[in-house]
Amino acid sequence: MLTTAIWLTIKLALTTTLLLMLAGIPLAWKLANMKSRWRPLIEAFVGLPLVLPPTVLGFYLLIAFSPENTLGQWWVDLTGSTLAFSFSGLVVASVLYSLPFVVQPLQRAFEQLDHGLLEAAAMLGASRLDRFMNIVLPNALRALLLAACMGFAHTVGEFGVVLMIGGNIPGETQVLSIALYDAVETQQFDQAHTMAAGLLVFALLMLVALYSIDKRQGSGVSSH
Amino acid sequence: MLTQMLKQMLKLDLQLPREQFDLTVKTALELDAVWGIMGASGCGKTSLLRTIAGLEKHAKGRIQFKDEVWMDSEQGVFLPPEQRGIGYIFQEARLFPHLSVLGNLRFSIKRACSERQGLQFDEVVEQLGIGHLLNRGIEKLSGGEKQRIAIARTLLNAPQLLLMDEPLASLDWDSKAAILPCLRSIHRDFGIPVIMVSHSREEVARLADQVLLLHRGAVTAKDQSQVLLNNAMAVDDQHEPLLSMLEAEVVGHDKNYGLTVLNAQGNELQVHEAGLEPGATVRMIVPAHEVSIVLDDFSDTSVLNRLPVIIESIQARDDWHQLVTLCTGEQKLMVMVTRKSVDRLQLKVGMKVFAHFKACGLEVI
Image 1 (cartoon, one colour):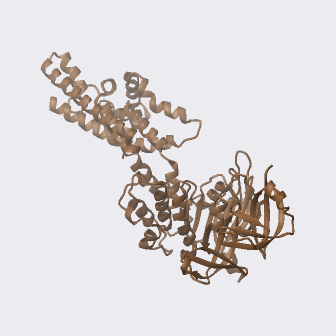
Image 2 (cartoon, rainbow over the protein chains, first blue to last red):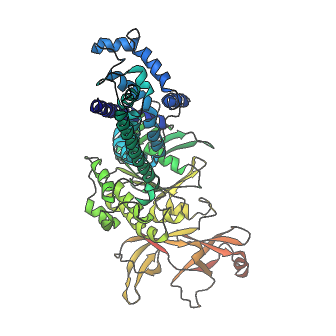
Image 3 (cartoon, each protein chain N blue to C red):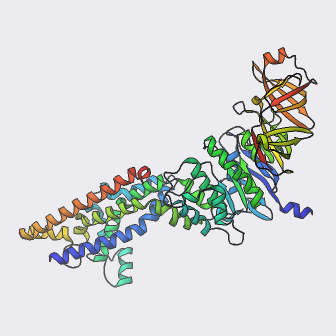
């Protein structure tokens, strides 16, 4: 049970982080360069999981995943199984739930980027995509690392959303935080201790890593 | 012949809305000269350069370089900046901080237009004296070093037109002195058309052949730099020291004293030996405050250069200073004197006097 849960948690966090980076990088770049008056609204939607109880997000996702609704039906037509109470459903939920933790640091880094560098690159013949890949991303390397770590750590730490839409199916949706809850409910305190301590150490190490990345970013410009 | 000439022009007919006033420029620049764009700060010099480069998205009108149309807002044509083949040297170096010096240069070489003959790497590196910097990161470089690398980066991109926005503004005097000859030789040796923006009379005097004068977003004058710079009223900026330009021919060298002898319309001038071949045409820059007026040529002085001149005009500069314009043949020399001196020497328009001065800058054309 323990190894299955650990493996599932890592798989979920890795998949989610990968998708988060793929979606978060263009979204953060778009937001950083957006002058439209709709920008605060989009930012608010991205930031919702920061303030919303996870159960609210989970509840609405559960409804959306139901085969009676468009998204749920479309998924059933596509794959033959339902999104709710499946690993795929967990991935979708995790991506939405951790989105602000990836988008916000990236957006901040993109906003701080000196646009003069992009003009200089354009005058040297670099196309838009070329400028993004070879000027924007390398100059936001620390923010990218930070965002990936935040996304990963936050996904490992989620509980409420998973409980709402994933339930507690070993090997499919039973991640560590749920397994811990399950162990306490069934009074398996030895297992509960192992998992709780493991998650605590993981969280601590992750935060130390995050803070050291963040600190280097602050002073990096002058000392590098 | 006419079509050939038209092909070597940059034709501008553009408008750019700005906060205080709109930039409206309609003119054509011949590309065989180095152009200086001058004017008080905020007159739209930089905006004009950025519009030519395609960096101002809100510009309207038409820009044609030789036979390429870069912008024609009526036809909906807007060639993105990266496809115009322009080298742009910004006021700040704008080096890429995540790359080394060599990385910055390679970035440029990789994206150079393959159809145009690029400048040789070794040649550019040597001209700008950056060979010892290639493997360094860019953070610890001095301002002058950064700007030289930015210039090298631009040249290695094989541009078909070079735009420079106050390339020397952020540099100290030593760096300026080192870079100025390089900038001049870009045009002379590599044959790249150059348009530069500057508020400094000296920079323009040293580099530009032709000057476009802007005032509040409109062109107010367009002429040879010598004509415009020697007219104090044309480029009137109280903060900029006035200067004159004299053209002269190298006659020979006085080895005993380390001097180069020049001939300026029949008058002999001497400057510090500058390693020039006899026969070369040079441009001599004479700041107005370095010239003194002497009534007769009998008294001996340590000043080497003495020109017989005629006073063409005397204008009040401020309460205590007057600007005297002297005339020698077709060339002009401006002198800043105190009102007291004008009264004491009883200077009048038409008087024959002598101008004594030390030569300051010397540029080979």
